[in-house]
Length: 284
Image (cartoon, rainbow, N blue to C red; front, side, top):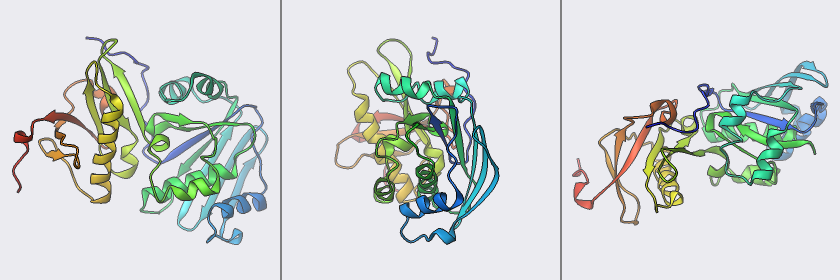
């Protein structure tokens, strides 16, 4: 049986990374003062004089900057070239935005890559720091934010506004930070897999979706399991079973036994298989 969507994709970077894609070949070039002011606008507790930007290269077609604030260290590198085709296939192409939105993002002419290399132990704070820097480099030419490790992308919309970025501490924006990718076996059956959980030190999850089943239901289950692992610091292993809240749905976790090249995430992937209530493991 042949899997579809085989793009020969690279292994994603395990550092939190965002790519900003622009409509023109000219890259944004904010001054150090303006950069600090825009970063401080996201975090009222941050004064502009607490932000250090080291400009190694600042040209219209090439940028290399190191940005330091609090315990964050973000490297910014930009070039007046589109992202490599395998990355756009892995992210923009499989994202869940309207075709015209994805087409606009695919037609970008330049990009900035933001790589988190700081010391914060909190993955949410790492992502918020990246989005804060993305806000600082947002212009009218910004077409989208590409998350290579999560196999997804999204338009700027209001997602880069200071008010929106601050809400990400209250509720993780799964539609932005996690990819839900379908790998079709045939026209009606497919594997649904998360991408990007590894940034939060949580295994990715996968489930086989049969005709008539709503994949959105499984995405809700994925989110519930994510919170179970992330907020409660629970380690789930193959053979473990779980009831999802008060849904009356029961699942067993299993190893990936096929199509590992597609389904396996950098921190591992667990397959969720629905079971009957009587198959739940007894309490330990």
